[in-house]
Image 1 (cartoon, rainbow, N blue to C red):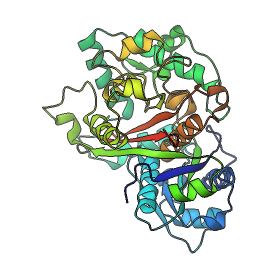
Image 2: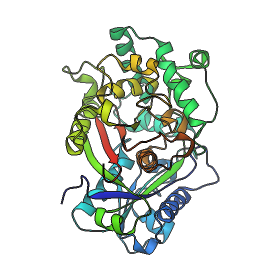
Image 3: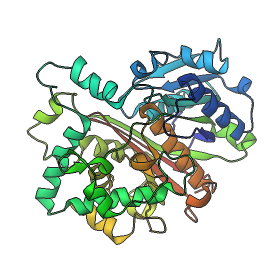
Image 4: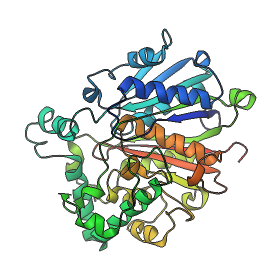
Length: 396
């Protein structure tokens, strides 16, 4: 049984994203999962299995290193729970795994949960410490996520004649979008001058070019199309899914065939998802996107890799207003990782929830009028893993 057109999202729940010292990792799971089940109009007893996406359980005292966290958080025992981890695609991997189990006929109704507790330690005590202390003693010294993507940014700016002002426009747009999202980490406008005058992190990237360190949880309920048509209050169909892994954590930067102006992983994952969804012109056939903007440069190159803009034309697309609220192909209306935040395991599920709400007409102030088909995209590690999922309204 294929996934495409046969697996539905029927409910979604997202916690606030931010510095949530008052909520534990288990709280994030429970609040998002219970909200998703309530949104689906069912009770937890109908859910047959769950998948948990968490990338960095070390920052939550290892409580998220297995599916046992879900059993504890929502009294899910003895039903099966699998914890998945795949860099920043971890949350979307939970969705993909659950969708395949439904398509295989193993289950009728399942949960995909993403959660990450990143702010109970300092930023330097979490991912930066892991990179510096637990990875290769020479290849990884000084290697941080901002440093890696700064290499991409410098290469792109040099090749295409773009500027730091162009990068700043992504931060300005996405922080503005977050003002319409009550669950986003930040709710304040930025100007280009704000972005350019912020402390430098890794040239040409400054503070506001980088995603914040954030806590958060997100969940979606998935079901077979047959179940959704008979029982769901609302639903969206998974039209296409693609996952691509194109290199290693260390080897990525030594690939002599890469021009380092984009990511083959995104292009390959998108091609798979588009093939399944029957999409040949994504600019014309998609209504709204959530794409990985861990740094401002990343949104620009991702719009190119996803086929929304031609290579080197991502800045032109951005400046045209097409990707803004009210544009013909709005991107990251949630605020994106830039302003919504990036609790790594939760992000992919949150993106799916956002697109689900858009194509079912329940995105509130962020609603794209007439949205019928949308895309969610995550990019993992140094750009070697990407996941793309296309959702559409039934009957389209």
